[in-house]
Image 1 (spheres, rainbow, N blue to C red):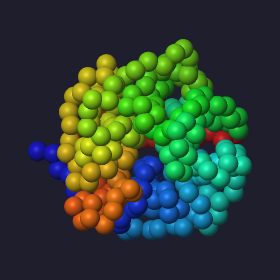
Image 2 (cartoon, one colour; image 1 turned 90 degrees about the horizontal axis):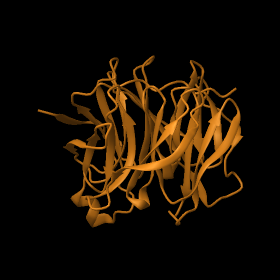
Image 3 (cartoon, one colour; image 1 turned 45 degrees about the horizontal axis):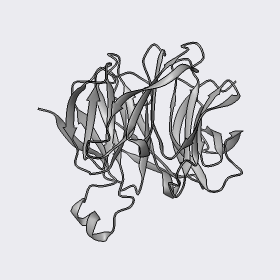
Image 4 (tube, one colour; image 1 turned 180 degrees about the horizontal axis):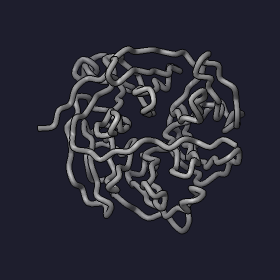
Length: 291
């Protein structure tokens, strides 16, 4: 029987962007709207909360001393020892209405970075490609960028504009992480409960998706067939990450954003981060190449 437990009872208004560091057995994640970076050891269960001073949504490992963080102004290098942020590449820094959202590292070391309007305004966001200091725009007119993830061999990328209800798939150049050809619908979620949020892909090519508003995590085969659905304790699951020394467990963030006092009482674990002990053949995130 699948076991779902609370990994962290710290309540995030908008918990997002989980990423696991196997070298330190630590999960990192964000409370986006409150500008917080959180970290907690998977076995130690010691929580640290870092105030970033701006909205941030994703983190990637550069090396043992540095991390790359996607924020509302762009990509910042964070010194692990001091916590100092240094702007590396500006992204929509001149647009105070937008912020970063779902982002993930391609197996080659490229970083796909999604943006969106802070008020979720229609079509205000984009998805960018960043690799060795170069930045390109991949997709525009995105309302809520989400589900950015890649196959292990780097030949397939997935993404969604959550507002559309369509999870997209596109062929990728494994050497650069750039899309080749046209995007095609991988999963049409429009007739299902909830919305497609963050996703990860395991070694078997199975895509694990957090369903915002659907109180679930869904697993899809490489052909888009729904393999299974795992009930979650919080209604608004937001993003999964593989954790553990074998990457054989899933951590899933959640949020209470948009709920009033009465709704929050009915969803008391909203904003917590959960641990799923399920059969999963996960993998670790690649390091990002900034130069």
